[in-house]
Length: 406
Image (tube, rainbow, N blue to C red; front, side, top):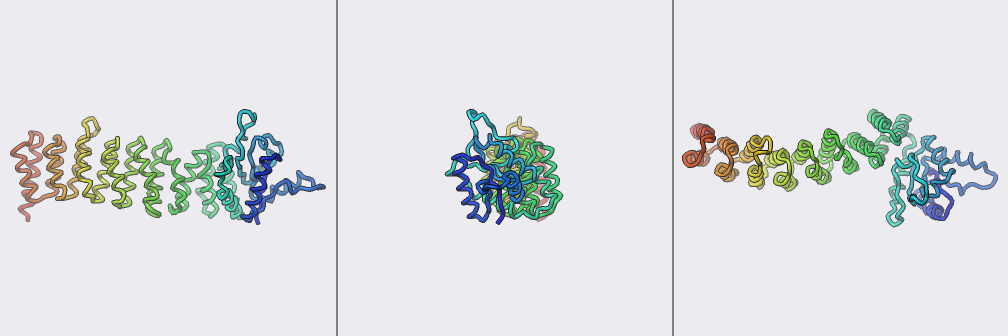
């Protein structure tokens, strides 16, 4: 049975909690050590030092009273000096009236919030301790890297991450899993990306862990997070990562990043995600993202998207740069559906602006067939403008050659 050292202040609220804590730890086959086990004749400072050395972690029960206790401060600082894992439990947060604050060393650590006893997550606390007990054979290199992850400086955090990147040992995984919930955003971001990679994108815990990376100021980081989610979607289930990708599409202010998330859905190759793509096609603020959505819908051969792509084309304004290229590209996507897109292309030819009409003429040439040939001939005689006419004639000529070959 592994041991943990419990550091607390001897007052009513702490003692009542420690009683329950001891009972729960023992039930989980974890041996708690508290100074209540001291008895007369023992050199108590030396005994406390020995028990801390023998423990896998030091639990600190945080209340205003314990924050003011020099003994509690000694116990956790001695444990930290030995490289022991510190596990702060916030039982009662200090207020301005208490005239005390949580020590910066403890502040940066992930807390177990027990201020609301009804919602106290005992199982998470137990799991963390059991996880530590299972790491008794941690290589020194991993231990040193983990220590750096608890540093207050970005330089040390990144040094710890870089060291863990170079280490292939099972104990790296739980260390990164814990770091994904760290209060420091930089560490959450880096540990989640590395955790996903180290687990070969097969551990579901990485999905939520990547939330920080998905909102990171650097666009490259956000794209890396999308890549990780894409791999997780392939290995686990696209539906598990879909909400995170969809949120990125809706909220990211970089059209290239949002479009990257669109293409992630395309890589899943499933029409189940067509509603998300159609929503982006019709409602997204960036035309580039609309084009990306049209591209994926065309690749998926979702014929029901043809009218939506046409609507998106009609909604493109000339001030949307480069508007003409976007229209042309999306018309090509419609044409890629083949004969089923005939009526939509015909409508665009009759009601679209000139660049759209030019692209439609080329689209009809791509589709081929007598019906396209007859329609373009009629349009050429009835309504084509001077700018569009040469392209209509070129498409008619291409269709004529096709028909003659058949």
